[in-house]
Length: 158
Image (cartoon, rainbow, N blue to C red; front, side):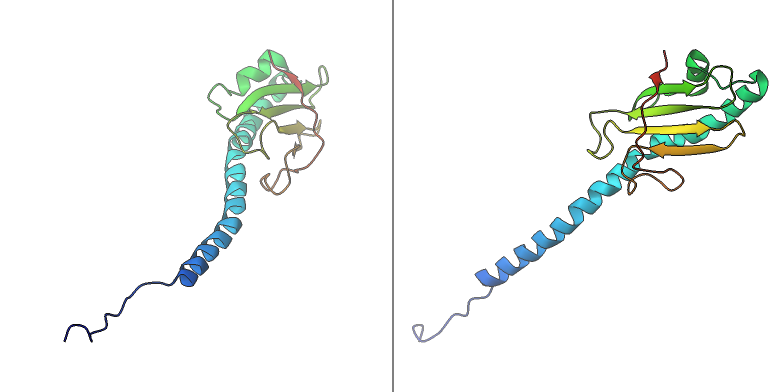
């Protein structure tokens, strides 16, 4: 008879569904900060690349002219017109010296909060030794560049 047949329901209980949602929430809480750090490190690639590429023409300028390039001369050696994350290029150099530095100031919009507005400074000693310092957190700055330094932005290149 039809009345005596029991139909078995299948599916997940409310508790099981709540456990799955809790597990997904925990995974998201761990993954999102790690992803944000990954994005910030990726956004640092552009200024580090521009800085590394600028060393060779600057060395050629120093050997030809006997001085570190300033202002307009530096701007011709470092083409940041194509840059998407760099807001400004600056220069610090002591007049008629082979030592000097240039900085990149990061844009303040469209970037990770840890990178936004940060400064990356590439410096050359009179002996021709290059160094890199940044005001951006050390965990985000690539190896070979000291992060967390109190770098002061250089005067903007005209």
